Image 1: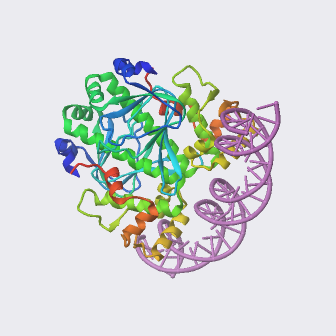
Image 2 (image 1 turned 90 degrees about the horizontal axis):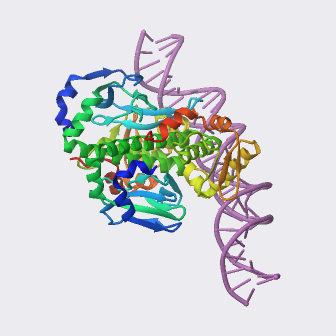
Image 3 (image 1 turned 60 degrees about the horizontal axis):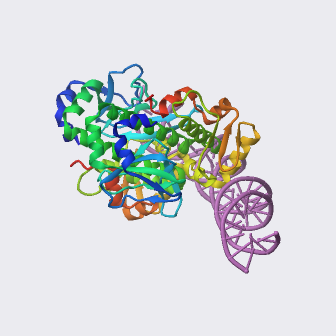
Length: 228
Length: 228
DNA sequence: CGTTCAGTTGAGTTGCTTCAACCCGTGTGG
DNA sequence: CCACACGGGTTGAAGCAACTCAACTGAACG
């Protein structure tokens, strides 16, 4: 993952900052620091309604970057939170722009990254709007599996996500109670096995893909960046 | 709207193409033509589940551009459809890249456009995942109102959208029947008035914003591009 | 050993969907 | 000119999926 960013490793090393689980990163007035690079841990970008319900818009995994800045260059309309202890780098806005301008490969990689992120969002919207709880959960599991496996060889059927059922629900648009029930049902059906603290083992990937209504190979190409 | 694209008006004029309502624009193999510019009419970008339910991911309004191309540069994961008779321009991929490379202003404008589109999607995901039918419909109406009003002076409370209730439902994640009921309820409450063929008059904007759970001024900045 | 917190389960409720009927404006062919 | 079909909107009735509320469990921790 890191190799895409080898061009500015000096920055990455210099500006690293550890944050504890639960920390909320505000970009209030913090204009110069715009782009985030996550070296370790997971972040969640979310929005909430006035009545308190929140929707997780995107997870940011180790090795990925994210820019929460709005068009005005100042404020952010999203809340960024560390889902576990994390190490992040805030990349100076102008420095980033400079890098992007100089480095053609980086620019291309970022473009592909954007497209992949966009594709993920579309898939999620489709399911948020139209699919049953079972399909939503199955899709979330598959997306996360693909992403944690990364560009590595095959799918790793077993992986861990630093999420509670509440957060899974905030992502899939379901109540935590219903996430629990759905997960349990998938367990009983032998499709997955869940362990302590969101350890997930996919036992029957084709069945899960069927439930999620995805074509695995296609989704893979669509959803993650092609950079080797 | 057009003025952002004044730099390549020659292309726009040259390659215009009229399409009838309902036409589906496939990008199958049509690699060289990647970026769409909509001169007239509305397009919808949608995805569908295997069982046929479809979700409209984005509307593309006159004066806007859209690139349905996936990361591989070939296929598209979205279906683009003309919601009414439309005039579009397919901009050659390499020509577009060249323009973007040469023209700093255009590049910036596109960046802002991307950020605004991203913000819109986040708002919609929030409501798809967490909000009631009433809130979703109210939000959709407000978003569309803001977008058709554009950067113009004030909100125009009265506008028209070339959409049926079915399509409104596909966008808001509701059945057409429930869209009808909700619209009817808003009518009775005196918040809006609907006319023939999706003519909409917002009679009580603050009330609608309250239902949609949005801060009008903030949403405006967030959702549309700042280019004057 | 008590407290806390996440997950689990049951019971009851509700909001949205589905199905079906009906209305109405429009187009079409006899 | 009327008869008819058609498609979109409207409404009622019935069903169901997901929600809320609440109680219980078990693990982690002081």
